Length: 108
Image (cartoon, rainbow, N blue to C red):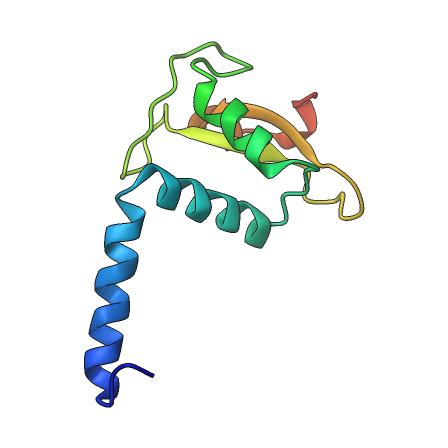
C-alpha cells in the first residue's frame, strides 16, 4: 500500500473516484455498475450504454429526456423487468415519470 496512514489513503481514494466520475469513461463505468447492481441483464453493456445515452426521447410519452444530478420528471431511466433473472430483461429507455408508473403496461 503506497500510504502508511489509512486516513490519507481513504482521502486519496475519495478524490480519485470523484475525479474519475467527472470523465465520460468514469460515468459510463459507474452507470453500468449501477445497472448490474440493480439486476439489469444484457449481453453487451457497452452497446446498451450507447443506446441509453443516445436515446433522446422517452419510448412511451416521447418527452425529451434529460440527464440531471437531481431526479426530475424527465430524467433518463433504464426500464427493466425485475422478475426476469436468467436472461436479458431490458424493456425501454424512459423518462422518470413513465418509469415510476405501472410496470405491467410497459412493453419491449
